[in-house]
Amino acid sequence: MSNPLEAIIDEYFAAAKENFQKENFQQAYKICLKILEIDSENSATLQLKKEIEDAVENYNLHLIDKEIEKIEPFWKEERYEEIIKFLQQLYKSVPNYTKLEELLAKAQDLYRKQYEKNKNENIKNYEKELTDLLNQKKYDEVMEKIISVEKLSSTEKKFRKLHEKIKDEII
Image (tube, rainbow, N blue to C red; front, side, top):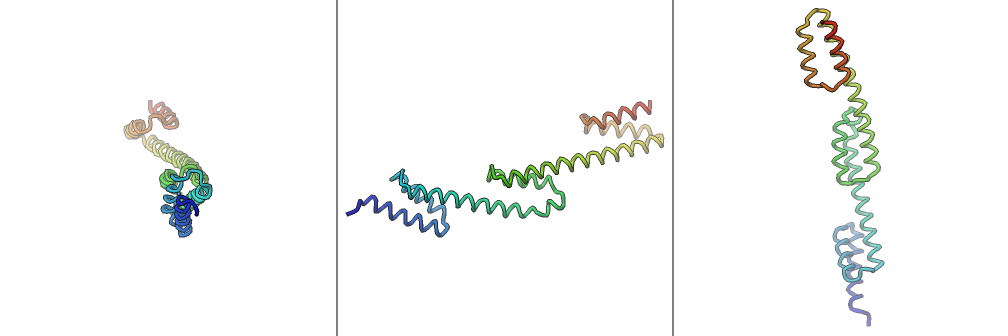
């Protein structure tokens, strides 16, 4: 006659295996943990537990990939700031997912380039606006603009240099 404990373990294991095959991973995992409480070195259960963990990880990565597909149009529209926020939220769920890390790095790089381009364009437009006002001898308006911009971006070297140049011209 076989050991009654082994019979219980075999019954539990069969239930865990059945749940795993039906992709009821949570229930299968719970049953494996119960078996391991009784027999912590049960190799078949340890193997099944590992298979469940792998299957759950693959399922989660598949869900993340589906989420990533949702932002596909954002890349074409150059909505990098939104992409970064979205990917950072996903990253909280699956840290160390290489695909996600690579996409996040790409979005951050493109965002930096976009930011620099916009900043340079804004500076050129601002410089043209100030030059036009100077040519029209509207010094008060020039100074008002300079003061308001300095309040907003006192650390920007390009603005400081431009302001110094214009102040020298006025004085």
